[in-house]
Image (cartoon, rainbow, N blue to C red):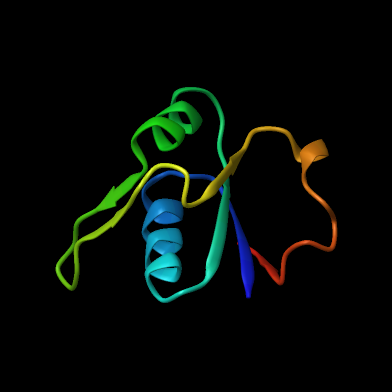
Amino acid sequence: MKVLIIGAGALGIGIGASLKDAGVLVDFFARGATKDAIERNGISRTGWFKDIFIPAGQVGVYDDYGKLLADEYDYVI
């Protein structure tokens, strides 16, 4: 399964990190400093249930809808 998360704020990162941790292929749509930070540092999510770290390069990050294929994702959140 492949999921696109539109927005990499607190909710998008939380949902996307949990899905990735469960084995789902995840890409994010993010812009500016957020996109740069994910590409450079990866994702680190801490929480009550589990801490998750996803190294840089293990999720896709896009800032242009034109670069996404319409039928590439099973779900868009």
